[in-house]
Image (cartoon, rainbow over all chains, first blue to last red; front, side, top):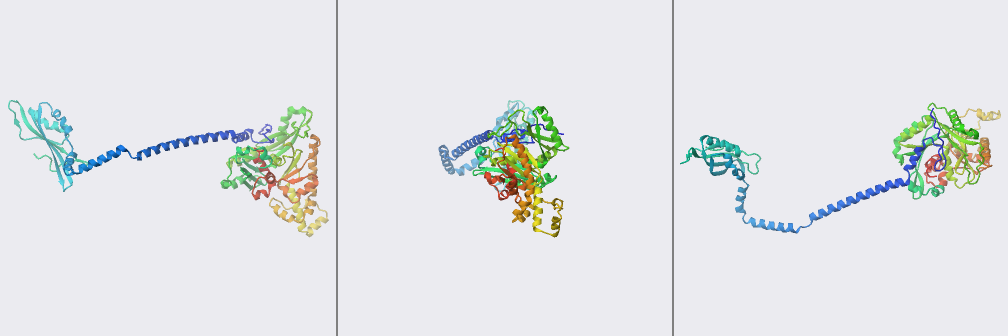
Length: 222
Length: 381
């Protein structure tokens, strides 16, 4: 048997006999209490206002930035006019500038040449460097293959040094082929020293190509 | 609500816009009610009746209501419920001054005896005359030696569990479970706030009836009565059947002096009421005569209660009697009871009296909505 020996509680108004615990009804009244609900509503309203205000401020800020970005800029306008004038002026020389532009688009060897003397090693004195692009075309526009050739004339002391020189240059330049030219000459008053020309070549990566391609007939023509 | 509610509870507007959900588990049906407050006053937000009686009616309620729960558009989960008086054992326990120490034990023993439930018994008690003196000075508890009376209400745990489970299955949160007499008294009190004398209410339910006396806004007396709505309905049906079918058998029975109670009577139910109302037209005098015996028996019971009440309240007399429940609106019952009791007896019409706007279906049977209304109004009156 379960007994609930509580007396009937005197409610706020007419007394009654409630078979559920008094706490349940008190909690119900508490949920309906005005101050608590108003406080919750007030807090929620303040939160909404603060959130709304923050959103409005951010929107204003973004709007200002967008307007600024869209507004005409005096410096930009002037620069644009100057640039347009420059283009107009350049157009007069376009026939002469196009080959120059083509040349300038080609890969440069400046970085390679700067350290070439060091890479050649001891007892090697570079006298002359010649270089050339060798491009084979298919038709007018399409390029079939392209190579770059370097001819390095140097005074080299020692036979073994001369024999090893092409390999060292290949290692340094990253080119694929190298050989010693046939016309070597002894140098007067310089014992064990010869003047030799080393030819090295490698694939040339031209603008617009993904991979460099060498000539199919074996590259250097000895 | 005009009158009591609006005058006393102006802050109601700021507390909430809807009342909690009121659910009354009646003997024949279960009624749900929710009120709402708008700029023009209170009105019925939802009123729903689910037919069903017997031990399985809790399940039937859930099965009926759950599929269309959203259609009811109830607001909030808090629910105030009431149990029909027939499920509750009501006892008046006198407590002698020299026996106050044993009061708890006495109440416990009485509660145990009054309800047989394998799951246990829950009881509540209410002092009916705990020294509260009404403004009219009618309270009679002057001396310390006056015998105190406790109204003891006991209910089986299984019934409480069934009701609670039903409400929870409907996604409601039960916060109160009262005996139907209290919300009924609350509704009547809201209607009679101007009455300072004692007044009574009689709930003529289908299977049970209860009589209560209110004084100073508090329940001062309550007792189950013998006369029920079912008995009244049976009497009326038999009477009307005799008017319509004066067959030879009936005449023979009448001549042979056979008592009506010995006749095989068809089982009556709530659905019989419209037919009886229809048949009753034009037979007011005969019906009054038929109901005379029943009304007189009830009047004797009421008079006994009044004598008891008057003894404890310096000869107080009842100002009026409000009728509610199934039997209240049966043809000529109101007049028969008034004739027998000799004081004003009226059928309660709380929605009309309090100015609560309600749909036609509710206004047509206001006396049956007194209990749900009292539940919904609990926080406001």
